[in-house]
Amino acid sequence: MSMVSLDGIQVAAVGYDAAAEVSGVTYGPVGSPVIGSGSLVRTVAGAAKAQSWSVGARVLSETVVRSQTGRVTRVQATDSAAAVNAVDWSYSFDAVGRLTSAVLAAVGTRPVVTLGYGYAGVGGCGADPAAGNGSRTSTTRQVGGGTVAVSAYCTDGASRLTGVASGTGGLTVDPATIVYDGHGNATQVGSQSWSYDGADRVTGT
Image (cartoon, rainbow, N blue to C red; front, top):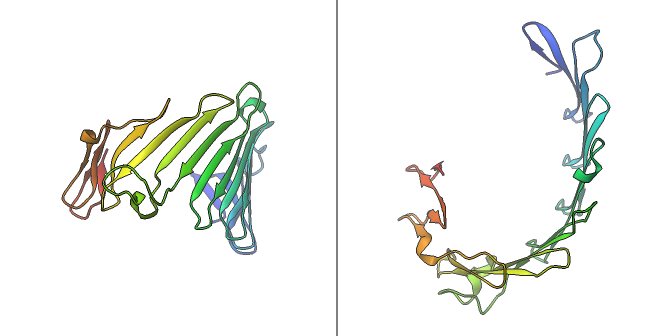
């Protein structure tokens, strides 16, 4: 597809790279001023690396940094019309590829936000002291130089969440509000609930 039309009038033209992947879109009827445009850049492996969208003088852009294995380690987004909306996330992983930290850089009056994720092999809360065989066992959250909020996740012998205990400022979920159906699907966690069909597919929340 190289063109998108509405009622016989072209509203967008689509461009492709040598690998037949979409590389850009231009919005506006043929012969008329361009309303907006977008461009997409990919790595040699075909993974998204950067994109930019413009409407008039305003430009929204995003770039992604990936590790040699293709894992996203940094995401930066900017808005030419509002510098305070800039986003710069950095991600770290452990040796087996699990997310261990996510850091949102400070910009303007917004302080740095640091999130941490733990996977303790022993000493986990709940019926499974081995901490769910690699499941996430804790999270931390710190805004600027403020207090570090800590939450601990408890699991049973089937590595299912059975409760969330917190330190100062952390998240708490009462074990009584965590419910599973006969197939092991979570039907309620705290104030959230889910329903499933016969194939265990989510049908409602």
